[in-house]
Image (cartoon, rainbow, N blue to C red; front, side):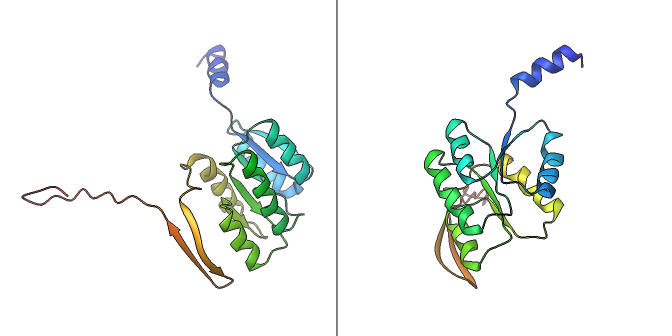
Length: 169
């Protein structure tokens, strides 16, 4: 493909935007490897307050938290971001968490939640899913939860295409 045509096509295609909050160098390198080769733009926020200001200024396809904050702080960040951009997707990376924090992240519809050590392949796959899968954040509700058990209600569509000799279902 001629370089001029390739450049004009790439300017038409919307580039995905990732906001990385308080990045650990290892996670920053991993996410850079995963997304920059696919034409993503990465913006970095030094802390949660800066992340809120950046999300107010422009939308991001995905927000990934850093490991230095607690899971509770990350869930609070997600709540704040959802008041600004209701369908923002967030992957929480946290070294400090409790089962209650994981449940809270489910209740707030965090896209995914990781604790170290991070599986590089799984994290990369989750990043791709977060921006390529249809929006599901309004279809799952946490009914009840304890550290050992979570009860969810998920909206789904029954697609029944079975046929019988006399009728279609």
